[in-house]
Length: 279
Figure 1: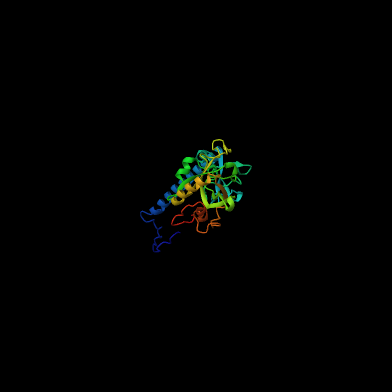
Figure 2: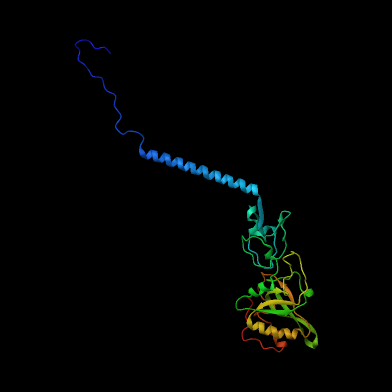
């Protein structure tokens, strides 16, 4: 703008200058750097995950069954008891004994358990196979004894396997000299059948089914009496058994448990001071 002669001079306002040291705050710069680092880490982790998934798909998967519920000895396997689980093929050696998938279902479907199995355990063939003699000796419960009884395998129920529960019967002379069967004990745990397993673990099939002994678990004083009862039984025959449900714990013929006192009386044996019930 032009200024008239003689008019006072009016200075024009100056543009405000930026204060010294102005610019982006230092804290904001640090946050930006931190965000970039976190973003880079996230990208790396995603890539690692993608590579892992691709490798897993490339090597294939291995499937096995896992128990949804716990199973007791004598109970049979059903489809509702298991679920199919998939793991990378590289883990196959860690699950060598698992039950195979057969047409979309377990190959041991309908088989009875010979060992207690816990919920979420991998389903293995060992849960259905009989115990070896060495395993049987190790599995005698504390404060109990294993007693081998003479039997005839062809006269016993099938399948009879270790860990099942049975009632023991013995031949005795009744009134008039007539031979009859009498219950010796109820709800007895079977430790082993014969000298070795019936199921041959190497072949996976049924091996020799003939055996002459059945080992059961009893309390010490019962073991001593059973030895004497066995000597009497062998004069006229062998023991026989009745399979018992694992859920059936109540006595039927011997209310107080232990060895049948009527049998002891017939054989002229003195019962112990205390007859304990089956556990």
